[in-house]
Image (cartoon, rainbow, N blue to C red):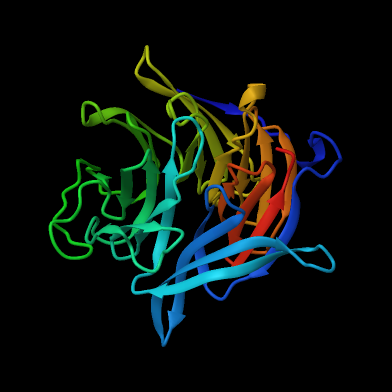
Length: 355
């Protein structure tokens, strides 16, 4: 069940004050695809690819937000970087039901179908991994609790792993089976995914939006949007079906909720770009507005801007960060007002906001 909403654009901003500010930007030597704040820190980790001796390699970098001693100006200091055999496509730290995030281990998915677990304090070698988790690229990964991992791939399947179950022999063995597997009959690419201990929400290139029940190991609900689903984020990790945000490659976003009485998804579409077929790579809820019972979310846009909205899709502010697409966004869960984002221009930026 869907409805269409109106979007208040630049001319109808909440006020004329600057709410989003591009605090500091750094040019990178590799192409990042995902960025996330390391829990309980002011450091950002990026994963992606770099070209080395004519070959595409995996790249992990960690930058720390610091300040110049004399001027006090912000800077991003590279504190770690390393090269790996396979380019990385996605990553996720482990989310918690209470919204806190103190587990500094993270999961990556790469272009060769491998998932790996890393310790962000010492990420030279993965501490767990599965080769051939998918046939081809893993485009989406999410992690929950201390051990639950879900990944979606180009092969159209969704797989759930428990990192406590170690491979039988050899580093990154293929011998560990997934604890749950869901197959998409049309084999559409899985582009986005979200998990807790009860459900999975998965979005596909062809617009399919599926909810899976982990208790019954079955699909619980499905609908189809008019665009490929680029990202999914829930406003409540303890109940991800309560309300979640979906971004697409067709210039619109959707706010979605699951109706337990009808067993159907109810959603409202908002066109936030006037030009058709504009990809909105990422959309995330602010973790800092729950006490006000108000949802604020931020989206990454194709034109290199980052926009912040209220629940009814009323524009709060918009800032230009790059002249190429913003690919990934993340809120710092420990320091209010800090966001990070990366662009197709090989840039890492830190934004600040009161939200």
